[in-house]
Length: 168
Image 1 (spheres, rainbow, N blue to C red):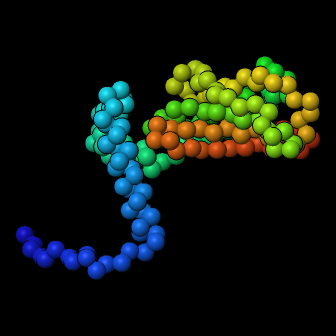
Image 2 (image 1 turned 60 degrees about the horizontal axis):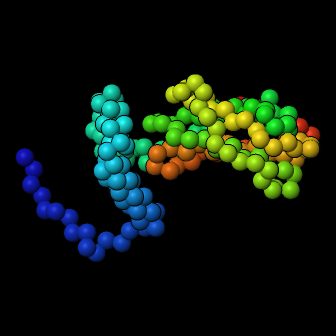
Image 3 (image 1 turned 45 degrees about the vertical axis):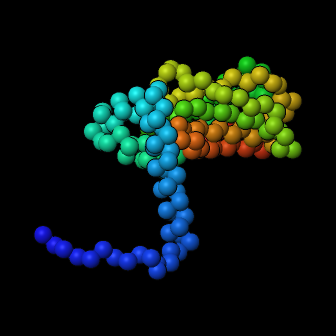
Protein backbone atom coordinates (compact mmCIF):
# COMPACT_ATOMS: atom_id res chain seq x y z
CA UNK A 1 0.00 0.00 0.00
CA UNK A 2 1.27 3.45 -0.91
CA UNK A 3 -0.02 6.56 0.81
CA UNK A 4 0.63 9.99 -0.67
CA UNK A 5 -0.87 13.41 -0.34
CA UNK A 6 -3.38 14.43 -2.92
CA UNK A 7 -1.80 16.99 -5.29
CA UNK A 8 -2.94 20.60 -4.90
CA UNK A 9 -4.36 21.60 -8.28
CA UNK A 10 -5.81 24.93 -7.11
CA UNK A 11 -2.91 26.97 -8.52
CA UNK A 12 -2.56 24.97 -11.73
CA UNK A 13 -2.91 26.84 -15.01
CA UNK A 14 -4.06 24.68 -17.90
CA UNK A 15 -2.90 25.27 -21.47
CA UNK A 16 -5.46 26.11 -24.17
CA UNK A 17 -5.09 22.58 -25.54
CA UNK A 18 -5.75 21.05 -22.12
CA UNK A 19 -8.81 23.24 -21.63
CA UNK A 20 -10.13 22.20 -25.05
CA UNK A 21 -9.62 18.51 -24.22
CA UNK A 22 -11.33 18.94 -20.84
CA UNK A 23 -14.32 20.65 -22.46
CA UNK A 24 -14.57 17.97 -25.14
CA UNK A 25 -14.53 15.23 -22.51
CA UNK A 26 -17.15 17.12 -20.47
CA UNK A 27 -19.38 17.21 -23.56
CA UNK A 28 -18.75 13.48 -24.18
CA UNK A 29 -19.76 12.64 -20.62
CA UNK A 30 -22.85 14.83 -20.96
CA UNK A 31 -23.77 13.03 -24.19
CA UNK A 32 -23.33 9.66 -22.45
CA UNK A 33 -25.65 10.67 -19.62
CA UNK A 34 -28.30 12.01 -22.02
CA UNK A 35 -28.07 8.95 -24.29
CA UNK A 36 -28.51 6.57 -21.38
CA UNK A 37 -31.43 8.61 -20.00
CA UNK A 38 -33.34 8.07 -23.26
CA UNK A 39 -34.86 4.55 -23.02
CA UNK A 40 -34.77 3.71 -26.75
CA UNK A 41 -31.17 4.89 -27.12
CA UNK A 42 -30.14 3.15 -23.90
CA UNK A 43 -31.39 -0.21 -25.21
CA UNK A 44 -29.24 0.11 -28.34
CA UNK A 45 -26.10 1.08 -26.40
CA UNK A 46 -26.61 -1.58 -23.70
CA UNK A 47 -26.94 -4.34 -26.30
CA UNK A 48 -23.82 -3.18 -28.14
CA UNK A 49 -21.83 -2.81 -24.90
CA UNK A 50 -22.74 -6.34 -23.83
CA UNK A 51 -21.72 -7.70 -27.24
CA UNK A 52 -18.38 -5.88 -27.03
CA UNK A 53 -17.85 -6.73 -23.36
CA UNK A 54 -17.38 -3.14 -22.27
CA UNK A 55 -19.16 -0.74 -19.92
CA UNK A 56 -22.12 0.97 -21.56
CA UNK A 57 -21.08 4.47 -20.45
CA UNK A 58 -17.60 3.94 -21.92
CA UNK A 59 -19.20 2.95 -25.22
CA UNK A 60 -21.32 6.13 -25.34
CA UNK A 61 -18.26 8.30 -24.61
CA UNK A 62 -16.18 6.46 -27.24
CA UNK A 63 -18.99 6.93 -29.78
CA UNK A 64 -18.97 10.67 -29.07
CA UNK A 65 -15.26 10.92 -29.83
CA UNK A 66 -15.26 9.00 -33.13
CA UNK A 67 -16.82 10.54 -36.24
CA UNK A 68 -18.17 8.39 -39.07
CA UNK A 69 -16.14 8.00 -42.26
CA UNK A 70 -17.38 8.17 -45.84
CA UNK A 71 -15.28 5.44 -47.47
CA UNK A 72 -16.58 5.77 -51.00
CA UNK A 73 -18.74 8.14 -52.98
CA UNK A 74 -19.68 6.41 -56.22
CA UNK A 75 -21.14 8.78 -58.79
CA UNK A 76 -20.47 6.53 -61.79
CA UNK A 77 -24.24 6.10 -62.41
CA UNK A 78 -24.97 9.84 -62.06
CA UNK A 79 -25.70 11.29 -65.49
CA UNK A 80 -27.26 14.56 -64.39
CA UNK A 81 -30.75 13.20 -64.96
CA UNK A 82 -33.46 12.74 -62.33
CA UNK A 83 -33.72 9.14 -61.10
CA UNK A 84 -29.96 8.43 -61.16
CA UNK A 85 -28.35 6.62 -58.24
CA UNK A 86 -25.45 7.86 -56.14
CA UNK A 87 -23.97 5.20 -53.84
CA UNK A 88 -22.20 6.00 -50.59
CA UNK A 89 -20.26 3.54 -48.43
CA UNK A 90 -19.85 4.77 -44.87
CA UNK A 91 -18.88 3.30 -41.49
CA UNK A 92 -18.58 4.30 -37.85
CA UNK A 93 -17.26 2.60 -34.72
CA UNK A 94 -20.85 2.32 -33.47
CA UNK A 95 -23.31 3.13 -36.24
CA UNK A 96 -23.98 5.56 -39.05
CA UNK A 97 -27.40 7.02 -38.30
CA UNK A 98 -27.87 8.78 -41.62
CA UNK A 99 -26.30 9.93 -44.87
CA UNK A 100 -27.24 13.03 -46.83
CA UNK A 101 -26.19 13.83 -50.38
CA UNK A 102 -25.92 17.33 -51.78
CA UNK A 103 -25.39 18.28 -55.42
CA UNK A 104 -24.07 21.75 -56.30
CA UNK A 105 -23.76 23.37 -59.70
CA UNK A 106 -20.64 25.05 -61.07
CA UNK A 107 -21.56 28.27 -59.27
CA UNK A 108 -21.76 26.53 -55.89
CA UNK A 109 -25.55 26.72 -55.69
CA UNK A 110 -27.32 23.66 -54.27
CA UNK A 111 -29.25 21.90 -57.03
CA UNK A 112 -30.68 19.30 -54.67
CA UNK A 113 -30.04 17.71 -51.33
CA UNK A 114 -31.61 14.85 -49.43
CA UNK A 115 -31.31 11.74 -47.33
CA UNK A 116 -29.91 8.52 -48.73
CA UNK A 117 -31.45 5.16 -47.84
CA UNK A 118 -29.42 2.28 -46.46
CA UNK A 119 -29.80 -0.68 -48.80
CA UNK A 120 -29.67 -3.41 -47.70
CA UNK A 121 -30.30 -2.50 -44.03
CA UNK A 122 -27.23 -2.46 -41.72
CA UNK A 123 -24.90 -2.85 -44.71
CA UNK A 124 -23.12 0.51 -44.66
CA UNK A 125 -24.23 1.03 -48.26
CA UNK A 126 -26.44 4.08 -48.77
CA UNK A 127 -28.23 5.00 -52.00
CA UNK A 128 -29.48 8.43 -52.99
CA UNK A 129 -31.80 8.79 -55.99
CA UNK A 130 -31.62 12.17 -57.69
CA UNK A 131 -34.77 14.21 -58.21
CA UNK A 132 -33.53 17.12 -60.34
CA UNK A 133 -31.92 17.25 -63.78
CA UNK A 134 -28.69 19.16 -64.35
CA UNK A 135 -28.03 20.57 -67.82
CA UNK A 136 -24.28 19.99 -67.68
CA UNK A 137 -22.05 18.05 -65.27
CA UNK A 138 -19.19 20.50 -65.85
CA UNK A 139 -18.26 21.97 -62.49
CA UNK A 140 -20.89 19.96 -60.61
CA UNK A 141 -19.89 18.61 -57.21
CA UNK A 142 -21.48 15.87 -55.12
CA UNK A 143 -21.01 15.77 -51.35
CA UNK A 144 -21.93 12.89 -49.04
CA UNK A 145 -22.21 13.55 -45.31
CA UNK A 146 -22.48 10.64 -42.88
CA UNK A 147 -23.67 11.33 -39.33
CA UNK A 148 -23.81 9.27 -36.14
CA UNK A 149 -25.93 9.35 -32.97
CA UNK A 150 -23.83 11.99 -31.15
CA UNK A 151 -24.03 14.26 -34.21
CA UNK A 152 -20.49 13.77 -35.55
CA UNK A 153 -20.09 14.02 -39.33
CA UNK A 154 -17.80 12.59 -41.97
CA UNK A 155 -17.76 14.23 -45.39
CA UNK A 156 -16.50 13.33 -48.86
CA UNK A 157 -16.88 15.44 -52.01
CA UNK A 158 -16.40 14.55 -55.65
CA UNK A 159 -15.96 17.58 -57.88
CA UNK A 160 -16.24 17.39 -61.63
CA UNK A 161 -14.31 19.17 -64.31
CA UNK A 162 -15.57 17.91 -67.62
CA UNK A 163 -17.33 15.02 -65.88
CA UNK A 164 -17.68 13.53 -62.46
CA UNK A 165 -15.45 10.63 -61.54
CA UNK A 166 -15.65 7.85 -58.98
CA UNK A 167 -13.78 8.59 -55.75
CA UNK A 168 -12.37 5.59 -53.88
